[in-house]
Length: 331
Ligand code: FA5
Image 1 (cartoon, helix red, strand yellow):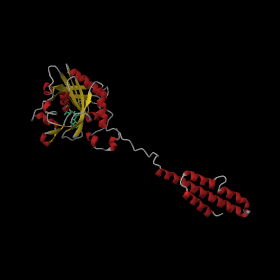
Image 2: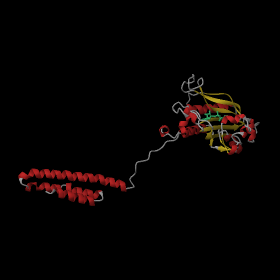
Image 3: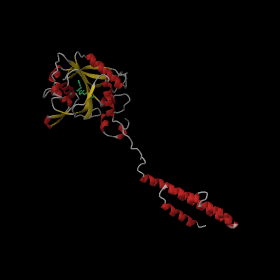
Image 4: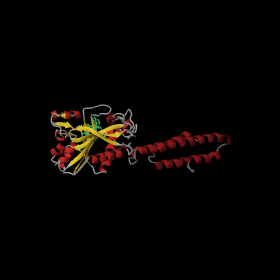
C-alpha cells in the first residue's frame, strides 16, 4: 500500500475542488462505504498473516491522515466562503445612546407639553434687542454684567446668555394667548464644576388675561414633581430680574437630606432657576397692552437640574461635554 501516493492524489483532488459539494464527493470517495479506504480494508484477506498487523497500522494511519486533511479543507472552505459571499451579514456595529442633555430635553418637553406649552427653538446668536434691550435692560445698565456674555463684532451680535430672548421673539410674532417653551443652547464666560461656557436653558412663557402668581406656582410644582418625583417640594423666594416684576428664585427640596439641611444644599433647598411675572415694560416693547394682558415666565438650566435628579451621578457639569465615552455610555 502506498500511503504517500494516496495522500498526494487526495491533495491534488482537493486543490481542484471549489465548492462544498465537490468536497463532499471527495470525502465519500475516500471515507464512504465503498470508498478507497474500505476497499483497501477488504484486501486484508489477501495479505499474508504475518504482514496483516503492519497492513492494519498503515491502513489506520492513512484513514487518520485522510480525515485530518478533509477536516482542514472543510474549515478553509467555509473561511473562503465568508470572504467572497457578501450577502452573509457581518457583525452589527455597536449602537450609541442618547446624550444625557438630550434625555433631559425630551423629559422637559414631554412634561410641559402635557400642560399646553409648545416647544420652540429660538436664536443662539442674537442682536442686542432680544436678549437685553427689549427685556428692560437699556444700554450700559449694570444688570447686563450678570450674564457674562460673549460678544461678536463689537457687540453687534451676542451668543445669547439666556433663553429669555425667546420671550421677545415669541411675543413679537404671536398674539396672546401664548404658551411657549424655548429650549436652546446658551453661552456665558464661566467655567467651574457648576458652570459650563456652553449649556442649555429652557424658558416657559404664558401670556393671557388674568394670569396670577398662583398659576406660576402651580406650573412650577407640576414640572418639578414630573421631572424630579412627587416627593420633591418647590418654593419661590423674592429676587430681582429686570424683565419680571415681581421676580423670584425657584428652589426645590434637596434629595440628599430630604429637606433637612446638609453640605450639598442651603438649609434643605437647592436653587434651580429664575421666574416672575412679565414686566409691563417688556409687554410694551413687543406691542402687547399690559392693561389687558399679563403673564409669567421662568427660565432654568437643563444640565444642572438633570444633575440634581436623585438617580443621576454627574458630579461636574463639564463632564457633559468632555465626549468621554465611559461617562456618556451610562445614559
Ligand atoms: C436667567 O438666566 C434668567 N433668564 C431666568 C429667568 C427667566 C428669570 C424668566 C425670570 C424669568 P439665571 O442666570 O439664574 O437666570 O440662570 C438660570 C439657570 O441657568 C441657573 O439656575 C442654572 O441652572 C443655569 N445656569 C446659569 N449659568 C450657567 C452655566 N454657566 N452653566 C450651567 N448652567 C448655568
